[in-house]
Length: 326
Image 1: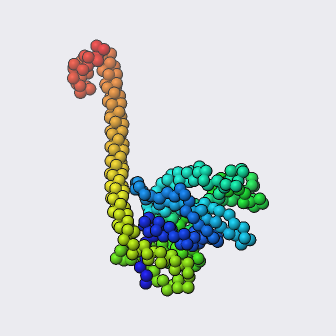
Image 2: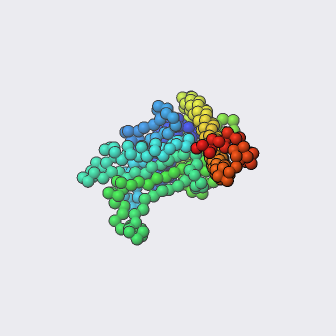
Image 3: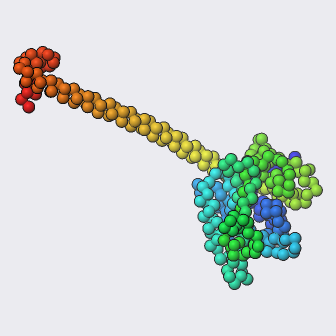
């Protein structure tokens, strides 16, 4: 069993993808295309300054050769994150790519942009989706929702839309059914070393006859023995422990706030009930007072004395006199 560095770490992933032969192998498998050349775009952006969440980004230019010999270049935007993050971060970076003049095809008089593929490598699951790898493609339809294929792909359409590939690392469980499954073996966290999450255990005999996979594994073996990369992994662990502690505190604070709001709502409901009962009691009291008043006036008209009326109604004589004098 070979012990390789875990590419879920930003530092390891960066080390892995800096080898253009390895990058070509991984991107070819993801895009399911024959990528004959890969280069890092000049405006590479990676998470060199830590913010509230980890999101490693790197852009590649890939030259694809089709079966008919036709070649063209695509922009491959790779974003990798450990933790769940708001989609706004992904959208903002996509917006940057659409704005960059460097992504316009130089020989295009119309200013068409290079086709773009967004690759998201996630250290978390997306909702209830069970597929480890999702291909989200653009499709044109007419008014009657019938697919339109004639004239496509078209550079105008490709300049304004893009395809996406989403990899859910937690759903990789060692099953190898195709070329991509084999490549993604090195991301499978079920192979994590039980003693140290920085490393994965890989049976390299499985790939003895696969030269491209041997390149990938050798690169990760180098990362595992590189002191700078190992130090960076330790830093990432410390960083994420702080993030997890912060998120836990925020979650507990949110729970306490929700409990306070619930108790407040219950108190307000109880107060409203008490006010309703008080209003009802006041109405009943007013009604009772009206009955007594009418009785006093009626008995007074019949000639009864104030004392007799008070005795009859079981009230004070002064009360009878007061009501009669109103």
